[in-house]
Structure formats: C-alpha cells, structure tokens
Image 1 (cartoon, rainbow, N blue to C red):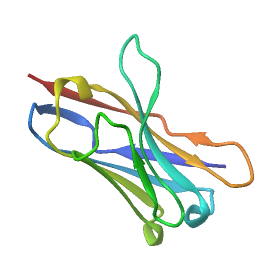
Image 2 (cartoon, rainbow, N blue to C red):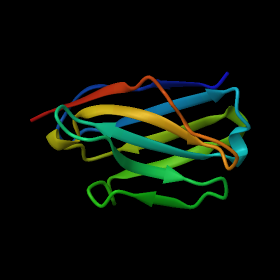
Image 3 (cartoon, helix red, strand yellow):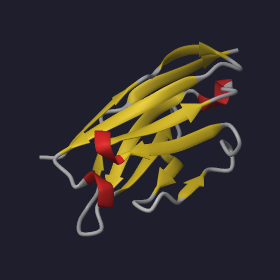
Image 4 (cartoon, rainbow, N blue to C red):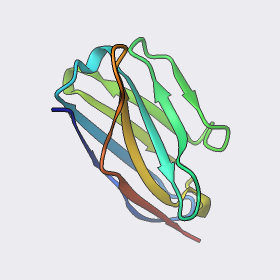
Length: 116
C-alpha cells in the first residue's frame, strides 16, 4: 500500500530555516506529482508547493521566494526547503502524492512551529 513518511518538522525562531522530507513507498514515484500542503488551527488545508513528474513547480503566493520544493526520484523523496520562516507559517505540513491514474494519498503530517 501507499506510504508517505514525513520528517524534518520542529520548532524554529522567525527568520530561521527548516527542510521537510517525504519518502514514499508503494507508488511509481517518478510519474507522480508530489505536493506539500499545510493546515493551521481553525483554517482549511492549503497547497504550499507542488512539483510534477517533469519538474515543473508551483507555489502559494505566501511562500514564493522563501520556500523551494524539489524531488529525488532515485530516493523516492520530495523535499521542502523553508527559509525566512514567519510565525504565520506555523501549521501541520502534509505530503501528498497524486498518480495520473487514480486518487491521491496523504502522509501523516509533521508539525512546524515558528516562534516570534
């Protein structure tokens, strides 16, 4: 079955950096679009960044210029480098995978907390 394992979350001061990782199994990683979403308390889950199988990326306006999504198909892993973190980036961050052939799957989430 599909498994997405996230890591790299934690507590950081405003202005700091974190790198999230998500390692996938049970999928043909190289053909899937991979994404990072986040959900803050009391808010809807929102797309942060996504990367297609061809390497095209898109970002939420709120993170453009600060976050970078990348993938390593040899390691079945997608990364989210987060720089210049702000308190409003505090949320649970979820990895998502989308196959061209069926429904998507979610990771269990990793908490990111940015203190002011």
